[in-house]
Length: 408
Image 1 (tube, rainbow, N blue to C red):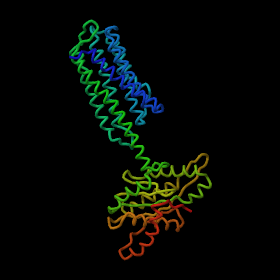
Image 2: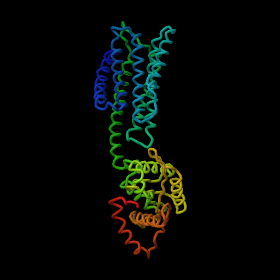
Image 3: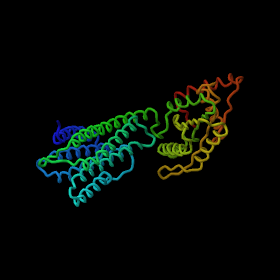
Image 4: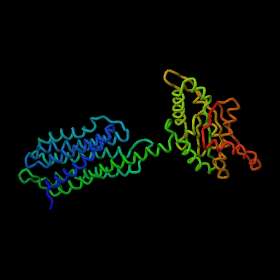
């Protein structure tokens, strides 16, 4: 049968292995703060378990202070690692705030006739609080990002916190007995083994999330425009193709007016700033279910599900007016943008996305011909007009797939 000291020794060995792995990860990625916090947490766990294994040489009440505070601080460091990982705001003191309160409470327990049971309970309570807060941070995650194991990790941490919380009353109900300076307790033996498993799971879930974040970055590189953060041409067309089969989906093709002249006047930095600020301002005006992408150069696409002709025209025209009314800031320069747009509203699966895009593209050319800074709403052709629009579609589609059109 296992005794407490043996279990603590196992904890020390296993946590030493975790510490080595975390330290190697830190050495290979010194700029990633979340790994720094997790490595420090692993070091703290090793130090805490070593302290707990020295009861034959150091009085247990002293180790209770030192090891207990270190153990609680370890869970606070893990929590800060997740806050850094998800880019959530935090302060360094948050890693040690709960352990500081636990330390004060442990000192205050000295007034009791036998403070040891309360002190042990405080250690488990402080850890449960930190782990529970960490589960909350994991559940919240990062806005706009959904890692596959994010919610699973949050649930693992929630169970970890509840398990620690369930152990809180045990030291008081079943006080730890001592043989000399060695603690003797069945519940302490088995709970330590159980918490060791959760501790290993905590670090494993952290590593899984790191791997998934790497995959998410690769996915974003494949699906997102590197400058504006919008969906790129391929992803926009993929998403728009699904929506275009439903009636009442508005498809708009937008082009920033005189963009070449803007580049010549303010340089490519001015052009890049104009694209980024245009994308940010337009994104704020669009509904949550809209698809907004950069098709190439200064050309953008918008797909609006569940919009009739009036609603779609109002939305796009609102964007046009808002863009024209606000300055673009680039270094010491300020200037205005206008846009031209072709707009069409689908009537169901009778036409392909290519046909709808060609109609919107024709509307964009019409807006340019009519003087720019306007929205042209295209009427879908009737059956007898299909032959008339077939040739313009054939001319536009190769350019659409292979290269971005340059504005005058």
